Image (cartoon, rainbow, N blue to C red; front, side, top):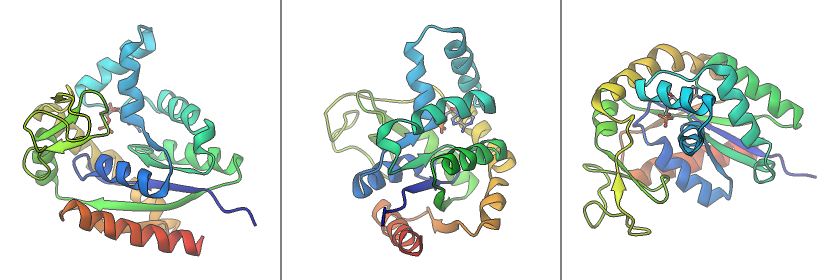
Length: 225
Ligand code: AMP
């Protein structure tokens, strides 16, 4: 029997620890970490009208249009390393994106395995985002001044590169993104709840405890698969 591919859709407000947990799960489960925000940030190096439009939208904290987002994430999921599955972080964010993902996975003979929901209060989320720093060499190495500080201030523990703050992590853009999440993305949970895929995880716990809760939920879902 061919094992089912494992597609994990991590949900939760920005600041809930999706990026940190996705990087850990990616290592533990040997699946690529596919982050829509990361794919858009990579476009910074391109000088095309689309790349400039995406950068301008991101600076305000608003959402990139669905058609652009679906195309860019869809292209990434078609790459060979994602045929056994992926950890999706930041996508889907809207119902049309969720429907497009279902259609794409169905075409590949697959489906979403589980939707872990990292639950966190709005105020805690805004504070965590404003405290967030990432590695300038590998942005999946993420730190938080209060909950997960680097050993040497301002330097990455893993590759010693300088840390930087994302330009969409200003307190204003952070508040806008968090509010937008509760308006536009949280309702997406109902879409996945109706399919019986959502598992709620308390995100206001130490990182290793959140990972343990996630791994337990994911293992159960894979076995039930
Ligand atoms: P993130 O790193 O997930 O917070 O994403 C950073 C920014 O990228 C967001 O504020 C949006 O402007 C854009 N973005 C990321 N993912 C999506 C998505 N699934 N749909 C629309 N816009 C997105």
